[in-house]
Length: 127
Image 1 (cartoon, rainbow, N blue to C red):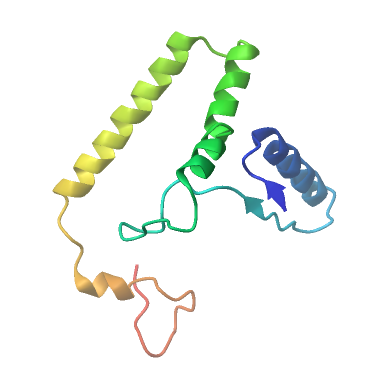
Image 2: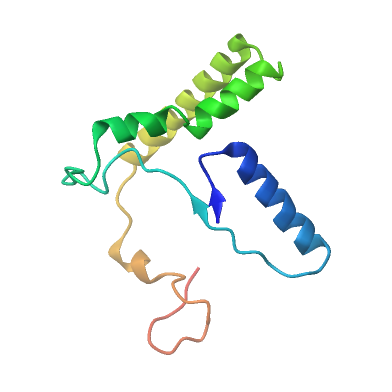
């Protein structure tokens, strides 16, 4: 298990797993334990936790921690971070627009490339 709310712990665990694999010692299973700020769905009233609990976890948000490290170590300036944020926001908006303006796929596509086995006898495998 890895505390996924701590980016340094995640990086250390990933590094250890990669080095293990490079030594030929096989794969590593990492359980990344993190906190979900929102409910499971629109209908989740989240009666199982308090607003104070959520706010406490927001104080250790991994994104904020990484940004603090970037600024502290002077890996990027505030202006560079803002530029990156804007590029990401623009890209997401472009993707949303493309998705919203694209037609729905044909229902048959539900069955395309579903099975790895190309000669699956029940549903034709198509690319």
